[in-house]
Length: 311
Image (cartoon, rainbow, N blue to C red; front, side):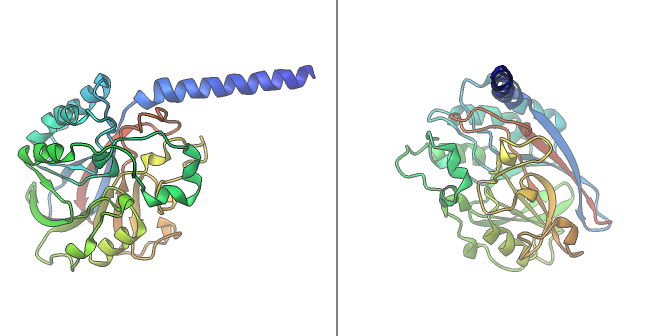
């Protein structure tokens, strides 16, 4: 009996320590990731793209605001924001203040469900069944998302909500193809569908939630790279194992970071990618729903991608 008691106490202590670490330390332990993506034409000069996602900001989070603002020191050639900026009804002014230094650089954005709707308390175990895939936000307040969109556009960022656009990134002529949030079922890819522009140096797909239907459609049309967020990298991961869920129909192998994607790649490892497979970058994001303020074995992050010529 004494050994059982000691075991129970040890397990309880480990659980308390893990909860303390994930809620007090790791969720505020921001990381800048740096990756190189060989996706440019042979003679192109490298360019640097800063990928931000899932800020999930509450106005009082001064440390998160200051950390993101300081990213302007990187002087990226372009900024891509893949949505879910808010986690509070009053977050929009703070989001615009956070992003203001980064709007000194050209950029583009799409929206996520938490740009449209305020967060709600939900059973975390729903992530282990199909209910989380429906993106159902009924019964929660709408956010003043149009004010945020106007602020981003006034800062010079391109709104890629079901939009195909051409932008200069460094000396490159880049085609961007974006859709509205697939997690809510708002995506209308047919509005932007079509072969990648043959006269562009690069075609990049931009989406908040990396659902298979969108990844397949973008890469089938010839996008050489797709950028997404939404997954939080699994948010609560098992050390030594990784993510348990992705909050969409993407497999956990690609829950965060850089991997390869091609139409029909679901359940196929990146090691089996054909030579012409696209690059997929999924950001683990900077935040969390304010009602689940934890991250475990999955630090909040932004990523600086250096795009270089194909090898």
